[in-house]
Image (spheres, protein in one colour):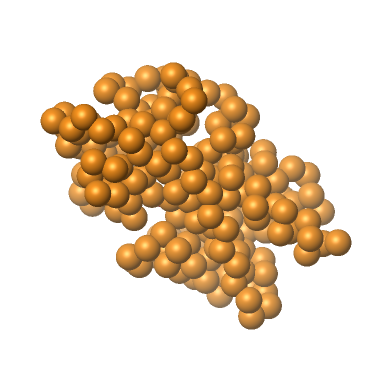
Length: 195
Ligand code: IMP
């Protein structure tokens, strides 16, 4: 069993990813290692942000480390909010504000197609950095449905389902979600690395 740092302060994400990684790898958060500051994410792409977060925490603790960055890409909004998903309604605003802005922007739009895209960056201590991508297509609902999850979960319904991510269990969400898919690729890589 080995420890890997997940460069995030989001406890929802930590439980989601730990449940996929299984017992072979234990996720350690920066907070558990004594770091409670902000992890910078100032790049203009998901790839750039994931790498920036992983490099920042890796340079601090020199242990294998990964980070993810996720964007909600809405077709009728030309891919917005994308890399700005966390601060769509402005700095210091929360998920409720972001959802309210999103539903407002879509009021006069017929096309509600959207996708979540997640990029994981992994630094294992060697010179190589690795990127893994996961995508889930779906649509934006007209109003919030469900109480599970976080972020935009309550207004995103994945393709093939009539319910939102916030109406699914963690196991159901992980099986089809952007992060679940990116983490599966990451786990496959870790398995090959160990063998
Ligand atoms: P980040 O990857 O933490 O930067 O996420 C960017 C934004 O997307 C934040 O507002 C999150 O709440 C939202 N987000 C990330 N992952 C998910 C998810 O699995 N479901 C819903 N919203 C998410």
